[in-house]
Length: 334
Image 1 (cartoon, rainbow, N blue to C red):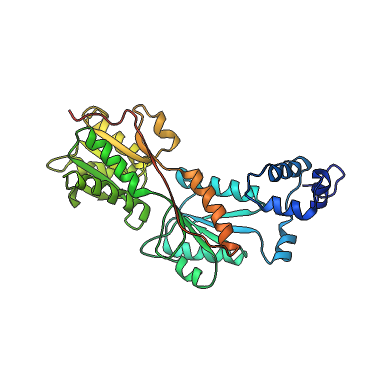
Image 2 (cartoon, helix red, strand yellow):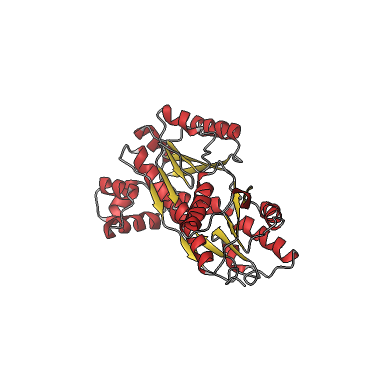
């Protein structure tokens, strides 16, 4: 962007208006600090219309100040929310996020990762790590900084929700309501985040004397149709569940549609708990009890940690705490 004179606003312009040295401006615009002086310099830069010259910065620092972000599909509200946190944080710090969808397909993941590296991104944030096809291992072996978000994998720094705790919160809630027969819509087995939610739910039930058999756990995808299909299998069991745990809200919404069609009253003679707390969860005819996943915060933290990793700093994995949100889709066993 250019100033009112038609020329590009420079760091010297910002420094002059802020009354500080150019080097101070440069440090402030790259900082994540909440120091009032840093905030004031950012405000002056915004008022003047300063934008980073990424090409010049890349030539000067041997960095393009861009990070590639790989997600299964950006149309998924959870991944879109995580990406918003990444994109907003990087943008404020003068960096660019370049996002691609991989459809959770190993061959596509590898091709899209190579595409991003061909555009000279300085590092990768990977949201589509698969336990059975970890393409990012080869990339990291080539010296590329790689940080995982949403899903984890051994040996990689990651920023995730405490998914196992989230599963435990869901189980304890349903057990406290008196439920003892559970059905679990488990999602894809290669997604560690989903597997951890299932593990946490089953472990919490086991701790209270309830063993959930494998026949009551149905692997699926994360779409509404998957919730319907898995729910139909579970309802047709000889001793059907009185309560369901679904590892994501979209599939839970599909399951709820099936339950209504089967003549069941959600929250009265059957209960449903989802996971993530997408905006639609609170707006349903029967609002969905769910485990709130701090999605945007996860993305923001992943962005700052990825920058630290690129800068050569010591970075460790972090897990964010989920929260149970109780609504009308769960009720006491009748």
